[in-house]
Image 1 (tube, rainbow, N blue to C red):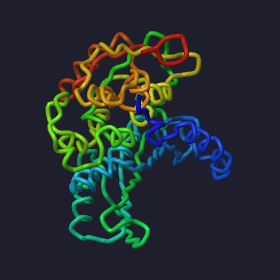
Image 2: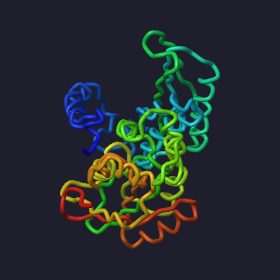
Image 3: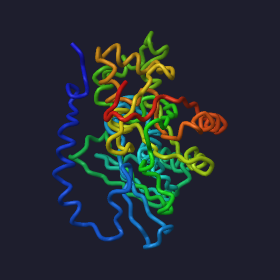
Image 4: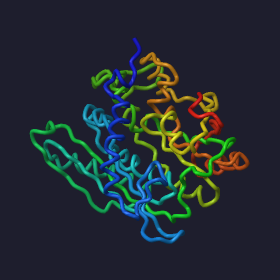
Length: 338
């Protein structure tokens, strides 16, 4: 029997309904500085009325149930990188430079050495993205969290000129989609990953033929941070839209930057699929579409560009140390075709 995300306990439809229900309350807090319709990966707040004025872009996130593997494998020095990545990668999708980051760590028992390792990862992520870790909160909550478990969340704010915001509005039919490779699973889909690889330390450290290594060697690989790459790229090229491939994979995230009336087609043969996703699909027994609606499938960021510059953007990404591929294009048919 196939094991998909819903059977692993994650109901994405419930998530959509929750967002729909909360919108009426959220909008009651808006004022004229909130630019509610400009972006899809961050929240916008204009600092002035000028067309070329400054705009703050904020994002917040956690790392989900990837934390379970940090507990099981007793490795806590990289999970903070994930917390930073999930926030700053969203912010930079709008063309904004992340400025500051704050973290929140809650645990049943405060173990100083463990907290230090978690924050070490947060600091590593902040250095990678060029933002300052200016504060946070460490909460001890006995009786709420088990002594050996914790949760972590982050919050970041960036800045961009209003006339430099990247929001996909100029994307048109024929534009090319460039995928920048991921470092692995990143921080989404772990409720399903845990069903497939299990939570037994001994099993996680057992060699897997399909992977060519043990699952333990891959499940805590930190999420790649793309900030410096993207900020460098947008100085040289017109990038029309940027999608961070997180929960929902290609199918939910790329359409967030595509104007109404248009769609996309993805050529799955345009890049090599990493072994980790082959192994997950083999164990799960699910089809390509469900895989692409759950995992990043080896692509962490997707850029929409005019076809005339697509090859040049790929070459520039190579000089910046990134592996990238032209993985698809924009069509006049709504939806995602794989």
